[in-house]
Length: 254
Image 1 (cartoon, rainbow, N blue to C red):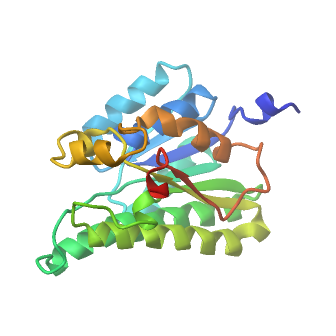
Image 2: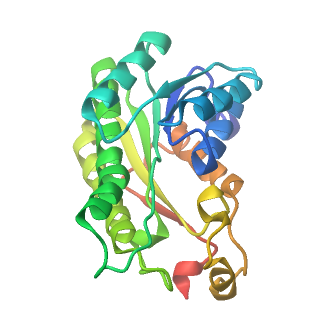
Image 3: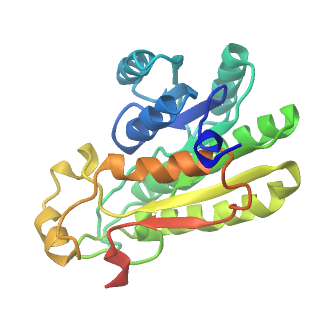
């Protein structure tokens, strides 16, 4: 099999959490363009349904599954719905996340827990459910978690200790799962985007300062994360697991 064929995803079934918009939607589009059928998993059901409809226009199949990734019961129900529909799961892109900019001295426990629950616990629960299914069905699979350059550096000027801590946790969680599940042929990797131009960052008051600091003097675009996700999802890099890939326009180099 040639390299281009190995990067195709025909016949594979994927889930994307936080897939209704932003980075998740962009990755879902890329996976669909490469032949995968997609389950868009999101708390915003109307937007998830719209995204699934857009993916079906690309020629494959797509469904929307409303899920709160912090709720173990809902995550299990989500996984069962996907397996009932597609019969299997081969790729999981665990991406749902939030950021609360609050000085540590003022951050409430509820705000801290909301960030950790979605960004770290939600990734764990989704990856756990995906791993269990992949182990059950055999044949391995690929799990890709969205971490952040904020798991490597402390961003300025915005105060976001909860977000930074959650994303650092995702990176080490990824490595831990990669070790545990290597015996099953399940690869677990993470991507660490820099500042990406999505709905989450569009109205940020810090955007001009980020651009001034950045070596490329701009935000990245969601489409600039697609190629690495496709690479990790497919069968062309079977020796790649337990790795974190920083895609930040060299921001963490400064």
